[in-house]
Image 1 (cartoon, helix red, strand yellow):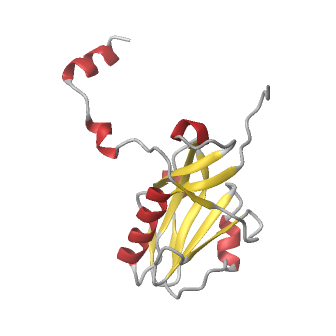
Image 2: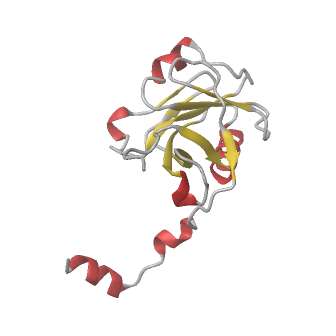
Length: 161
């Protein structure tokens, strides 16, 4: 039995990638930027060791134009599930710039999405900016609407803890 699970990111949930592709297209001609969150693969129905990217976090106050996107670091949540970053290049270039590499210090995977934002218009990189494999996986993600599925009794029970 292994005491520690792999912190390797083994893939991205298809739904998370679809969200990022759509958000990139909607943000065009400006760059899009978000942070990646992951869950243990087995928790989302993937029979592999490691983590699967399950969410793309949009950080308030992110500023973007056709050439760059900047996240306000003071608004980034302290999140143990953070695994990397994702951003778009409206010019379609699927390789990191020097400025991109400066942001790759945190996280194990960084994704660049290029125009025209189709299913194959993206590339994954490691912290050094080297291309890395990242499988697109069918993962059992919770329904985002379930976040709002609670009653006053649930709130009262939580407050009584």
